[in-house]
Amino acid sequence: MTQFELAKSLGFTSQAVNAIELDKYPPSLEVVFKIAAMFDLHLEQVFQSRQ
Image 1 (spheres, one colour):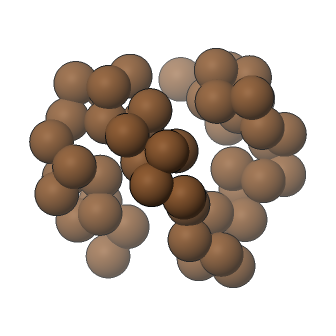
Image 2 (cartoon, helix red, strand yellow):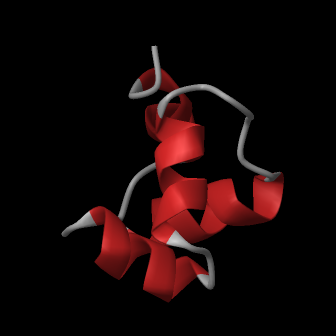
């Protein structure tokens, strides 16, 4: 999945997804839940992948 596709699924711009990936700001819990559901991950796995 590309940043553009992820951003579109989340209702974001690809620039916002890029900023989250670069740790410019943390995602909201709502976004974390959406990412976990999209990729069939536990919440802990979403946060671990950012480290």
